[in-house]
Image 1: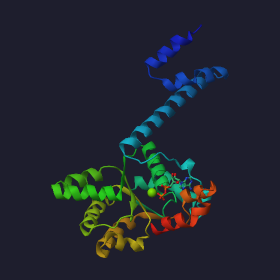
Image 2: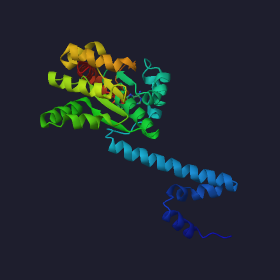
Image 3: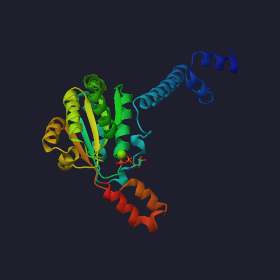
Image 4: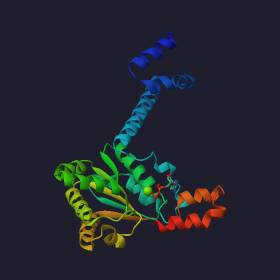
Length: 261
Ligand SMILES: Nc1ncnc2c1ncn2[C@@H]1O[C@H](COP(=O)(O)OP(=O)(O)O)[C@@H](O)[C@H]1O
Ligand SMILES: [Mg+2]
């Protein structure tokens, strides 16, 4: 039976089978059985839909950029055990409601890894919310003032994974530490939290401005958790050094980034 190419494309468009439509030529070049061809086409369509879903979700969940584990150069970060990161990407810890702390100096790929793991979680149909610590604290403080704290805490407890990025860049107000504590207790053993921080947990007392609250927060976070510490150089600076940009200004920029730790 002769098939009119245009008619076929029109039918595929009508069913919104765009991945199949785009693969028609490639498939035509290969010699597949009917079943093989069907599996090939359906596989492509599913892959495209998954990618679209992840793209939409990572926008809704407010991820700052698109990063995947595949794009992470483990060679550039020898202190990091790739197996530990791959284990994170399986998302088993999310199924159990455990926490993950990802620590290291600026530019060492913490946000990259958090986003990549978050996208993996979306792929596995978990709901995820990405928020910086500063935004989170501002949200909680505002809700507290408006008398809507309960509602905000409930909202923030909904996603199965809450990614809190950049804890420690700004010290918390005493009130903020307490609000943060309420959030952590609310989510405790219910939903997972992934925190990235440029501070070691020993410094969290200073970050929260209150060692007692910091201990209470850590007590809950560390109960079922894994802690991953990156000890290495900033990838951003490494890239600049490579391109020669930093040869002269290197020491100065390096110092700036170090003081931000
Ligand atoms: N090991 C790595 N391989 C590939 N890209 C990296 C790596 N480490 C960092 N990057 C990239 O460098 C930039 C800074 O990393 P980022 O994750 O924002 O660092 P951090 O959150 O630790 O400050 C990002 O664009 C990130 O994708
Ligand atoms: Mg970051």
